Length: 393
Image (tube, rainbow, N blue to C red):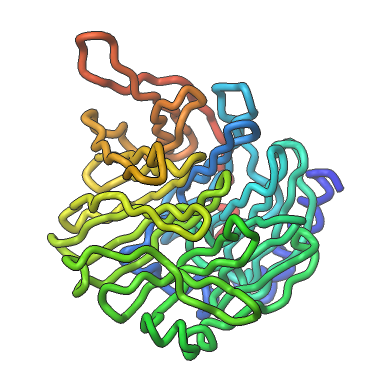
């Protein structure tokens, strides 16, 4: 099915829903629920060392007026340039989520917004040049960047407004894996005081993983399904964090390593941690104090590296541990992020890139430093996007 055919099919569905009532009513079970204060936005990057890399950013105007339009960009393997790859035909004011399912394949989901009560899904087999319809997912995918995950043999996992759904046929059909209430009521959920789901992933062994926020202090809410039952897994935290509330901000598996980004505590005592799971053993990076400035964007890159956009125009990256016995090192970027930076990506040479969206223009910046000079951001690329202002009224 071509990109145009997908646009016609899903666009017709969206238009029919719009006729049912106009414009700005949100689904009270999904789109109308505010994001938790500690949860990053949907802006993120999903990178591949040997395939297509992806980035999601918000563009356009005011979200309150439905003038915001989320866009998906792709960077082909071996290229330094990002290309617009947003599937056409569906209103994406509610946001986009992306999961790379292979070197050139990916699945993206449109979040519910206005009168759209479910999530249309689109799949690509050629790096975003053409998309075909799959799904849909109902209820819609949750308002979390890691709400879609790809596993072995075409398996998919999605966090929704009511729990988690799974697919064994690349998204053609979906079944309920577990409801949020059932997981919270089970032994593993009660042990953490589960308050909500924030991410999904598959472990290196193919087992489904779900992550969330815990109401019991000092507890990491990462759950693994094994032999039909859910068990809580996760790193052992330092004793100093025993009284801190813990939330999982991001969760992803790449190259046999699962990476989790954690927020511990609140206010000026808040800190960030990153943990890596290889086999059955967790490695925990040193805590990174952020004094209440929790990230607005979190991206997990190949090898377990992490890129964060922090309030106040600051950015931070964490290199993964070189060996299982070592811990990663945080680096607070010395150069302030360019204005309007939505998310950080990593260049193919390993340098941080800032993707900054201002209305209809995306600007890509790369952090570079000449010998003897301070690091500064160099503009690499600008992409102009045709924003359909007024189409969502």
